[in-house]
Image 1 (cartoon, rainbow, N blue to C red):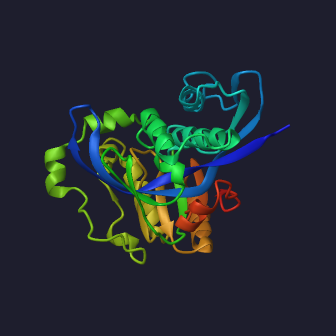
Image 2 (image 1 turned 135 degrees about the horizontal axis):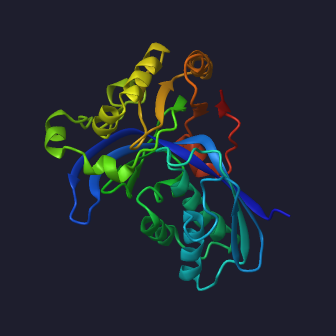
Amino acid sequence: MTEGWRLCPAKVNLYLKVLARREDGYHDLVTVMQPLTLADELRLTPGQGLSLECRHPEVPSGPRNLVWRAAEAFGAATGQVPQVHLELVKKIPVAAGLGGGSSDAAGTLLALNDRAGTPLSAEKLHELAAALGADVPFFLQRSPAVGRGIGTVLSPLDLPPYWYVLLNPGLAISTAWVYRNLDLKALAQTGAPLPAAWDGDHPEAWVANDLETVTLSRYPELRELLGELALAGARAQGMSGSGPTLFGLFLEAEAARAAARRLRQNFSGWITVTRGLTQAEGEATGRVKDEWSENF
């Protein structure tokens, strides 16, 4: 019998500017991250010790999974191994630039903390999340944010509930490879400008991603798909993270659905229409249903 559940939303990077390479190998950056109604589902049932089940063929069910590592980190912080069976139902594509694994880890921390009566503070959860990965702390708050540093210094951002067409052609792109091949000197001259404000009425003025300089050069077919999104009526379009997922931003649901139907005629990869979660939704609940995500 299911004891609890939590939705773990995907995200898109609407803006990503790389500032500098750090001595620890990470990069300082500025990014705007938008959580989506597209989400994995985490189910919890009482168990003997810790166990994890995931039927996705590309996702491990043991210690190599961030969900498992998050549960272990929670147990170490509280002094008690969670007596729980976790079932992860994947709907977010794997290794797609959509933050699925990071979101699953954050959802695990939140779900276990709720289940245990909230023994850990928000600050402690943030600490545990940051140790698991740079994107994980963002998913603790589940609402749009500007990330700085390596992405763990977060400021809330109020954005309209844009609609998104997501395209994933199934390319395998290494995030580490993308960052290794960044030309930071060139980006200082030609990279995404840092806007004075994030104007929600005119996202086309600031949506940008420095990582496109590497990924699109290696995979020109992605550049062609961005052009198709523009022709389909997207208000703005770009790449999420290091790719390969691309997004087109739309102001209304039907415009996004019409674009997805048009794109499906010549695109054989994964296409989904989804909506951005607002700040109010993120603050209200971790269980916003994903009825506003639709595959095409």
